[in-house]
Length: 127
View (cartoon, rainbow, N blue to C red):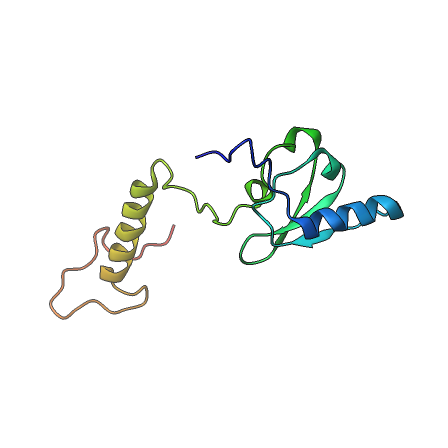
């Protein structure tokens, strides 16, 4: 549900005070804040605000397109780990097949088992 127009937009007073102090001094430094719920007013444009995402501070450079949105919209709290890629199951099958064939194959220098037939090809020949 949207906020009542009668109340007006919420802007954290402490954050607004920091921005007005920066405007008066003419500095352009990063401001750290936990106020993700603050709506971005036009006064924030061209300032960098480090918004906390629950783990670390994400620097957000405020542009004109961001006015009216909330600061938290630009600092995601969850990381997207990618969905399964197309053909990933085939790769998994190939990996398990190679592991099973390598595991079931005899070692390279192992002697043949007792009573085993000689290898095809008749043995060693010089060319």
